[in-house]
Amino acid sequence: MLGKKLHVKKNDTVVVISGKDKSKSGKVVSIVPKKDGVIVEGINMIKRHTKARGSEQGGIVEKEAPVHISNVMLLCEKCGKPVRTKVTVLEDGKKARCCVKCGESFDK
Image (cartoon, rainbow, N blue to C red):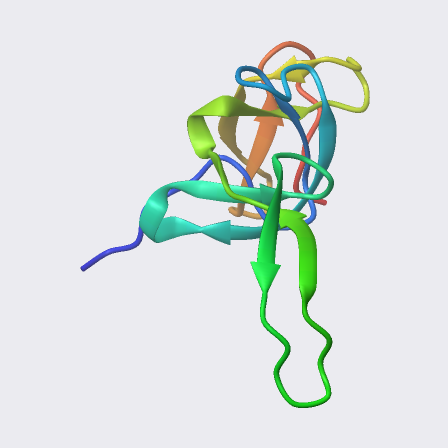
């Protein structure tokens, strides 16, 4: 089975466009392709109660939960706004994601 094509990659800066963390931005830590989600640094924080295991101490741990891929947009450094992307073919034949508004390339 072929993998899904997602519009964001690891280490991209994204803005949340809906939900409790609307208009917050952060860096993509990881991608969860099975659930169409992304884990963004400092966004969608949840608390988990953990038991002590061995030398690890138990307690309440705060961590990031996945945000659905449709609820985030790439942040363009040149525009300074969340933007849609398009795929353009470069001179050397490689494909790159570009900003729809200004044409700035995200893949350097």
